[in-house]
Image (tube, rainbow, N blue to C red; front, side, top):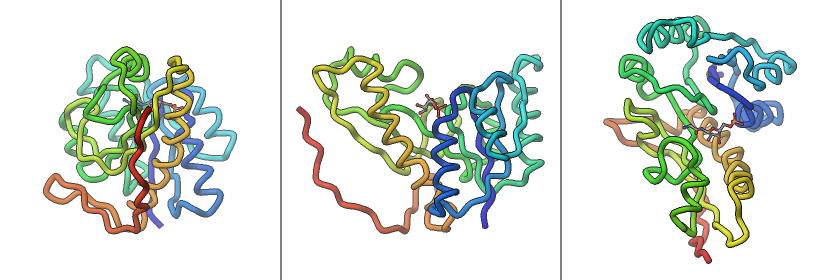
Length: 212
Ligand code: GAR
């Protein structure tokens, strides 16, 4: 069974969704550790309460990105994971770090990339007046919130939406597509080949989402 390490910075709801899928028997991976760059990340408590190994590599203890990323990589590699899963890990990563994990580093981002990389994605989607928004799971490249797309889920933007309502609708989809993408990887169906995603899996063919 493949081992994964999950990196978080805060709430950890995506981490919880992954763990829940493991517990339900729907995700054949061993969660080797949950690592945070913030000692006060709420998700760390949740992980520890569920019996998962946890670790903290506090970015404040390092002089620069290179030193922090080297320490983080050493911590991760101590668990020898097959896959590293960024789940709300809010740090810009150095090129060396990203290259070290090439093809085995996934991220989830709360927008339909390449739209709205960075922060405040839901507010920006509302301000732009887009009618369809969503989330993206992608392999990580050195550019922020960028890389070959594995899976996206789209949701309508409703006239009644505020940032919280839209964020909640997207988050619900995050909790579905991230376990799915990690399962594909765990089953050997998903890989990065020459910078492109290769996916050998049954895929639903939903009708188009038309909004409004
Ligand atoms: C999620 O919405 C995730 O997509 C986002 O942070 C949130 C973490 O929530 N990630 C990014 O913005 C990465 N650029 P969680 O801690 O409850 O999983």
